[in-house]
Length: 114
Length: 113
Image (cartoon, helix red, strand yellow):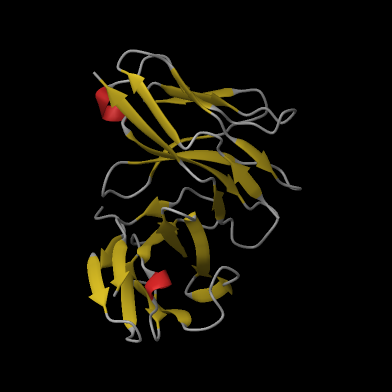
């Protein structure tokens, strides 16, 4: 079945530095990936979603590129802010089934310090 | 747009008791999903409704868990004979259709003591 792997569980970095959160996936169907962000005690919210192969998508300073060749959709930002402290999930849509349900990675907790 | 509404936000229940969680999807959304979130397991898919019909319950534990969607404005997740391992945040999400963006509610935090 579908699976998503996020290798970093915890990331702590200083404000103003760049960040990259890894996301790789496995599926036998056409991949459609998402990044969701969840601030403390809030609902997960869509941050961005994949486009076509090798095309970068951006939102709120974050960006990611779907690379089918490496089954990856890493999330990046060039300069993190304190408000970026949150839990980040990579998710893969089920494009082969009936529901379009999302399979989530384990999540990466990002803490930005001043 | 009020977003997905979940009640109660917090529930503490004794082991062996029943817990019912409610979800009101965004008006006009035909797809409703339930997920369970724990620190250990992350976000796990439980079940999915489209136009109120149950389509995929492959993530639901076979015993004690059930979900319904009696009308387009609400869905319920019921857990019978709750156990401590059922403690989690239960998230409901809706989307315009099955291929669209999921919008999550803030979740219902269930604690079984």
